[in-house]
Structures are given as structure tokens and as C-alpha cells.
Length: 300
Image 1 (cartoon, rainbow, N blue to C red):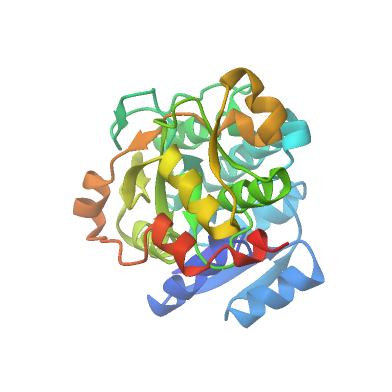
Image 2: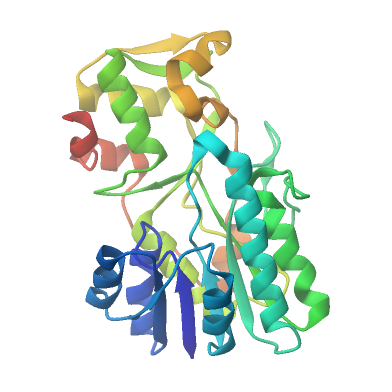
């Protein structure tokens, strides 16, 4: 198949493209800069120049593809609502272009559920409507089942970890270095699911070939790692103590990350493993932290 990937040069995308190529697919990757285009070409894919605001570029690339894997997102937490509006517009453009084609539209989403409840692939996203996080784009995609599209929700945990990660875990590590303490919210019982980036990329590639219309795929290796254990592992990596941060002070201590850190979000991938024949093989989050995968953030 010919697969168009947004975010192909990004964290999850750069782990996905090699698996797609190994499966025999031709891959086109969206690239908004010269550096991104070089990275896409180094991975063995063909660069398509443009960004998420270039809807005509996105439509044209989708028109020529057998499947679209949408992994890109504007990670602008200073204007998260605008990022959500962009996300919704992009997914809607893909739906309109792929309507009545039967082709795949796989859209990145999250595994945030209700505290204390294990989210499964059968559960609907808690984020719906244009004002929801990511613009409620998962719902926009999955509703396209009735329009002749094969939509699939690719649900990732906040912790997609590995050497070189600059995401949420790296931000927690940098915050610990800057603050001189590694903080967890309250008693630290809130849990985060996690997956190694290599396992996440392999799950996406399998979903392109195997996931049916309207399904959700959970790229989750660990259902929920207690935030206190994560903070303690970060503390050991940075060389600072792990301490409790009062929930009332979380926004001041963690900044924009406070909206996610301290959130109890447990998720299962049992159905995904059965559906795709996917079994995670990478290191755990705590193993990555202990092995120095976040030294770049710990040392500045």
C-alpha cells in the first residue's frame, strides 16, 4: 500500500515509518521544514512538503494514498484550544477526501479515561466536540464509518518513552532538575500507562494492515505505573529527592504539564494484542529511566 504519514519525522512517526517500510508499504511523510524532509528521506520515505495548516496539501496526499496515518499535532500548550481546532480541521479534511473510498484513516489519540477505571478499546473517548482536547478529533474520525472510510483510533499513553524522548517524561525530568526535587501530586497513587516508542511504532504499522473500521487500538505496554514510582525513578536519574506536591500547588510547580501529571489514567491493551498479534518487547518506563534514556534532560 501507499501510506501517507503526518508527523513522520516526529517521535512516534520516526518509529513507525521503518515498520511500514518493512511490511512492504510505500511511505510518504509530511515535512514542514528542510530538517524534517531530510529526516523523512533518511528513514526511507518520500517527503511531502507542508504543515498541518496546508489543508490542500493534506487532501492531495490523502487522495493519492491507500491509507493515511495522522500522527502530527501542534504541541502548543500555550494555546491548546487553537491546536485542537487545527487538529479537528485536519481530520475533517481527511474524512472528506477519503469518503466512499474504503481507505484507512488512522488518527492519533490518547488513553485518558476515568480515575480508577481501566480504559479498554471498547470504551468511547471521553473527549467529544470541538472544544474537547485535540478538538475531539477521534470522534470525527470514527464517525466516518458511515461515510465509507476505515477509521481507526490510535490511542497512545502520555508516556511513549525511549532514548531521545523530548515529551512528557523528559519534561518531568527537566522540571526535577530545575526545581531540585522530583515531584508527584498528592500521595502519588495516580497512574500513567506507558509504552516504549519502538513498540508503539510497531503497533501502528500492524493497525494499518489489520485494524477494522471503527476500532480503537491501544499502544499500551504497562497499564498504569504509579506516579510516585515514576517520580522516584526520575529523582534517582537526576540525583534529587522525590517529594509530594500539594494538588493546589501543582500548576505552579509543573506548569502546563499539571493538567496531565497527577491524572489517574489506566488503560488495557488486551484486545489490541489479540487483534493485531502485538506484544511489547521494549524496556519498561522505569527501566528506561534507570538505563539513562533521559540523561539528555537530566543533565541539561
